[in-house]
Image (cartoon, one colour):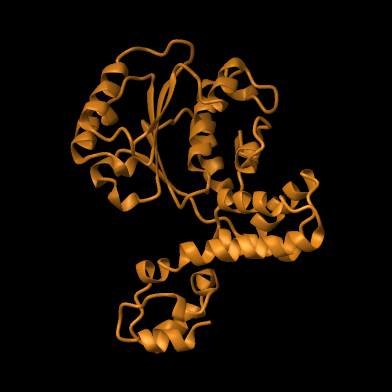
Length: 303
């Protein structure tokens, strides 16, 4: 984990496969593929925000380009390549925000630049975050290069909306679906961080953070940051609850409409019976606007 930031989400960002939270199987699979020299032309990482997509992309880049070699990968004392990749300033590793560089012209520039061999490492790697934002023409221009890239070129795509990525692209990538982090794992993780930061936060407040983060490590750490601003035990719990409930009402009140199709009371009860869906209905039903015939039933029965 890095220590160059006071923001917890960056300070405790994983820098190797051993530090990944809840994605151990994916890390092991990628590690073995590199160990057996079966590295795909492109990786596709998909999952909700804050589950480790960009972190895993950087870790892959470090494993492929570590100056100490695969058998002696950097753990704490980073080599020149690993240090530069961690700080996002390596000359051969390009992190692109597809949301702001989505046009076919941007992609053509990328392809043109990919014709040149890496300067100081074994592989030249393109990391495209939020790749679902690329235009249809941009994706089309990537197809040939993605299928038959130069030996030194690798792509890593990250997205929160896999359904928007063309199937012709998905079929050319090795896809990994990152799951939400389990509540018990996330609780133990943020509790250790609280202890390292010498914070005074009760288990009740930490459990509330876990619940509202919905399996996202980044969300949990961002909320923990707010809780640690308090200086006394009572204020920690109170401020955490106020901050988190306000945030939940602001964000979740629209999600019940966007994500749930409820037409009957039985369907609503079935939804409530799912533990992982409870955060969506944390507040009272009349806080949400229902767009179906059961709006009155929803308002009177939820909460």
